[in-house]
Length: 157
Image (tube, rainbow, N blue to C red; front, side):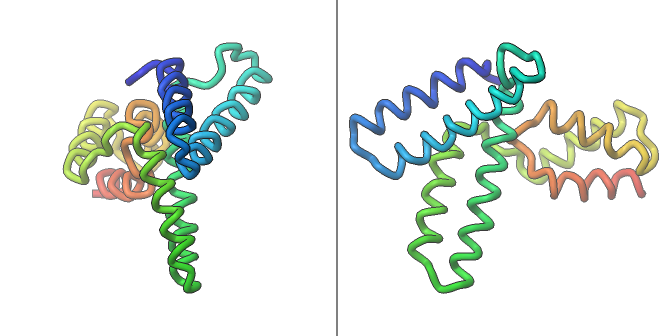
C-alpha cells in the first residue's frame, strides 16, 4: 500500500497535469478529492494526529466518493437525466485511478475465510472484529456491504 504522502503527491501531480491539459472535469474531480482529504486532515489534527489521515483512510474516503457517485448516477438515470449520470460515471473512473485494484468475489471470500480461521471467530459476536481487520488491511479494495454478507455467512454456518 502506498504511503499517504505518495497518494497526496499522485493526486497533486494529476491535478497539475489536468490543469495543463485544460481537462475541466478531471480538474474539478481531483480538486474535490484534494478538498475531502484536506478536510479529513484537519479533523485528524484536531485529534492530535499531526501527520493527517493515513493511506487506508484516504482509500476509504475514495471508496465513499465512488459509492456516492454510483448512487447519484442511478438516481439521475431513474429520473431521465442520462447526461448527468454519465458525468457521475466519468468522475468515478477518475477517482478509481487512485484506488488499488478491487478484490474479485473469489479473492474476497478467500481472504474472509482466512481472517475467520486466523481469528478463531465462531459467532456473529465476532463479526465486528473481522470487518475491522478487513477494513484495515483491504481498504478501498473490498465492497464492505458484500463483505459483511460473506462474513455473516461464514460465521453462521
